[in-house]
Length: 262
Image 1 (tube, rainbow, N blue to C red):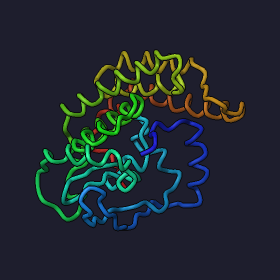
Image 2: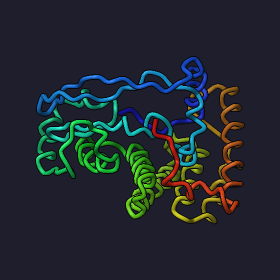
Image 3: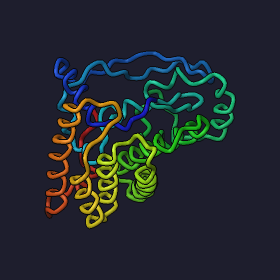
Image 4: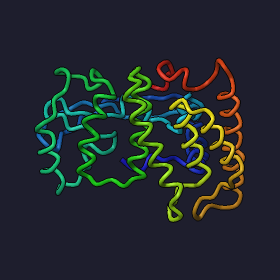
């Protein structure tokens, strides 16, 4: 899985492309498991529209396809679990170590359709698989933010809180790293989001205010693109702050009821 920290410049590009594909479509595709050669049928996305960037998951800076249950693959035999795009592309030299990890994996039930298992259960397995693949801290920050999102959506508050605390710790560490390529403005947005979903609205508003006052910078970006990204994120931040200050529209209040899974 490629890095899932999506920047404003990427969103601007993807949204313009997606206008030509106004509906989210999925189709089944057969995959052979690299561990046990089992044939599995998983869903692969075909098209989507730019409206996906307005889904409630934006308040956690998470977007399609990672908000969809279809994107979390798991083999029905050995239980190899990965993100969409990684299942048949794992490094061959890592397969023996992954196989060893899977020997101790037990899932809640046998299944034919991988969506019979909750995303949160699949992510528990994925966490062990990707630990073998030696991902960096930026990757893990995204992972835990997603884990918090899906556990929150399923109503697993304790597990969502645990994952979001890990995400927050890593994004704050990334923010303090001057060599990081994550835009500081975006890191503050994510930090504020995690604080909000961890019931720290005071800290969330402080981070979002700092984000509002921080210039958007992205390596090798054109001035016009930076200007558009700055304006776009400022608009999102202002809206977010107003929602946090409200009594009925706080994003976290709808944690287990939002509908981004398409």
